[in-house]
Image 1: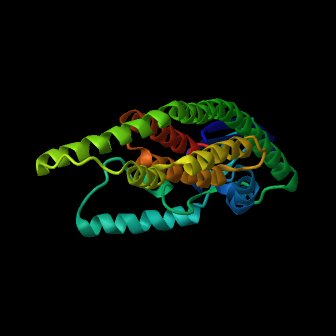
Image 2 (image 1 turned 180 degrees about the vertical axis):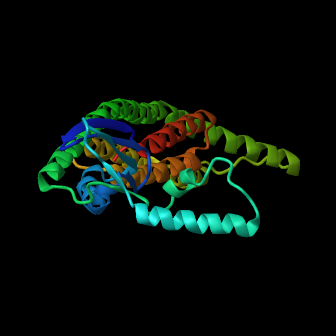
Image 3 (image 1 turned 180 degrees about the horizontal axis):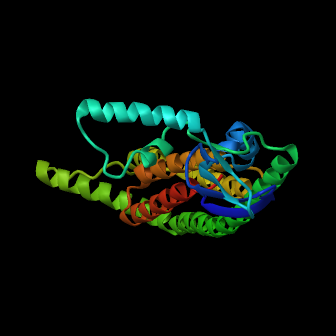
Length: 291
């Protein structure tokens, strides 16, 4: 689910801005970007965030700003001189020059500029931890707001499937009459083609018709589909993370809808089945956005 949270932590000589962003994803994909002096705490940051967010593409950004006259960086002059000498020798060897001078290049070389505070105090870490929890709380509130909108949309679509299922019932009796007339018409056409015009035995005809209609009966599919829809609504109302479980239930709903459509043998019922499938696919798309 999408979300955003931001907090500020005031440390000794530093001001940190902590931002957490999340996008939709089937699994947790966590990226953490922190200043140099916090690299040793990156694993702790991951362990703090992972159990709380569970799912999503999550980006954590912590940026540092010096407070007052605090010196945050030091330059390793001996290492800088060594880089400078090596680069000058390289330029002479290739018979090239550096119009802007070598200093900008030297400054960017590894370990020339280092943090003035390599180790973070425990008190400062507690402030950072509190700031992360504050940002997570705001992100969670953002997610809950979006989740409420998704819940309303999903419930509306499940209700639409149930309404379509109810609308099928009046068409079932008409379907039986349509099948009977269709078979009689085909038999009559067959008799005319053969030139005998023999009428079928009424009892045998009804037996065969009942057998045929039993193959077309989808009462069990309707009952199971309604049960799956009711179960879906119950699971959706639970507090714990149920995204994967809801996905499994939609798979079962899809099986019943497909079977119902294969047995329909009626144009109007088929249209309703197509609408059911459309609503179910939209539900599946929305489930990718929830935990």
